[in-house]
Length: 184
Ligand SMILES: CC(C)(COP(=O)(O)OP(=O)(O)OC[C@H]1O[C@@H](n2cnc3c(N)ncnc32)[C@H](O)[C@@H]1OP(=O)(O)O)[C@@H](O)C(=O)NCCC(=O)NCCS
Image (tube, rainbow, N blue to C red; front, side, top):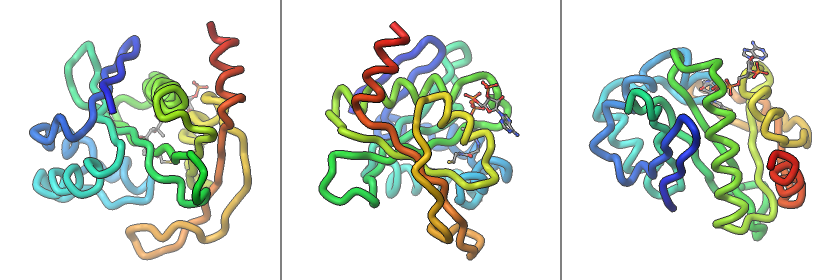
């Protein structure tokens, strides 16, 4: 897992920035961020540090840093794809500080991580899921070229005790290669 640089962003594996738990807490405490992704707002810097250690470090999760300010503004990761046992596939997940929404940052980060996943991990397919109400994330997913697979009913048990439907999307390696070729 390496650093990834894009025009405006630097993606660094969270394992190399454990000391930046304050940066995670600063945006993850916001009640408008986590619940959209199904997780509870962080209650303390210590909780953010624990999440970096126990959830981000064992998986492939990068901190997203805005190059112009040096600030950590989000996270993006490639977790195991639980729907595709034995297939070289990963599921992408992400979140971003509220004051940075709407500038195309996550689309920029996601495309870079897709490139990394297909090139470095040699993935044959990549998946992503979101909730039916999360129109912003659905738009990011669409802009990145994922295709809609379907709706899994009550597939995601979220922090408030309810079970949410999942909209499931994926992109095949050859679809990504065709898109990347067209963008050259
Ligand atoms: C989802 C999230 C990562 C998007 O990040 P972002 O950097 O704002 O995304 P982008 O700017 O790249 O793209 C957002 C797109 O959604 C569109 N959008 C914004 N609000 C919208 C709405 N209510 N309905 C439909 N589209 C909307 C924007 O116009 C933009 O599309 P465009 O480029 O065609 O104009 C961010 O909102 C976030 O962190 N949300 C909370 C956590 C979360 O939901 N994580 C995802 C879990 S699956």
